Length: 59
Image 1 (cartoon, rainbow, N blue to C red):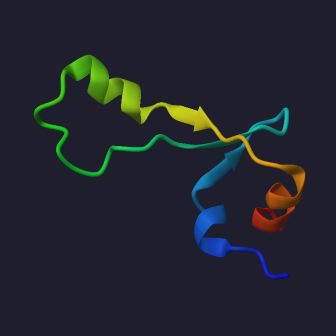
Image 2: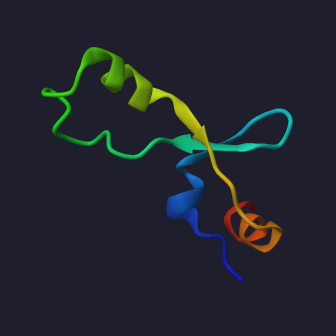
């Protein structure tokens, strides 16, 4: 099975092997949000997947 490259580019692997990705809801409509909410959305979020799915997205 081929690796899904478009999704793989959005992931970051930590040194302990956790998968991190950008949180949802950051693309637009951020001007009305409170500053704390804007900064909270910028943080990386841990991605929880099954073992088989992880193998599909990482080369």
